Length: 160
Image 1 (cartoon, rainbow, N blue to C red):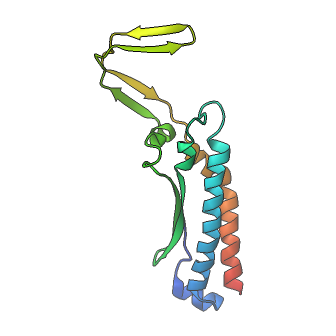
Image 2 (tube, rainbow, N blue to C red; image 1 turned 120 degrees about the horizontal axis):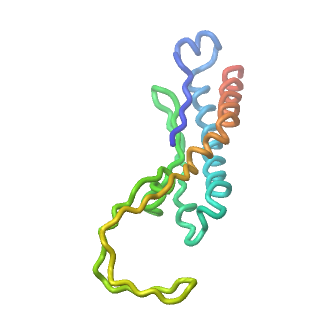
Image 3 (spheres, rainbow, N blue to C red; image 1 turned 60 degrees about the horizontal axis):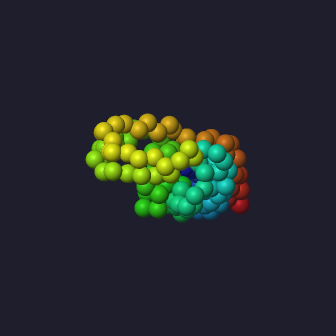
């Protein structure tokens, strides 16, 4: 999930506002860094809790990673992303999909609420995983406050 902000036309910004475009981009990057961290914390504390995404290992919450914004010639870009090295299942939980289970011919035994269950293996089958979209819904929840904060930082830097 990426966020981007651009002060378009550096020369025009310099001419009209009497400031350096670099100052505006630096202010945008600083504000965006705060927004990215706030968004990552919001995802961890608000979106990755409750009945659907129960906390067992904490890996899913730990995998939400804020990335420092980068200033390029095109503007400023930053992101919050799911680190697949920490929770390989995070993407399919967010986006949904189908897992193709290869099946198994192993004898298995496991405990359920009704007692011990024995299996002689399984045939290959598909497992549908519904999309929970915790990343997108968090960004949608915070979109306006992020826009407002970054816009205010750009206005402040431009008027300084």
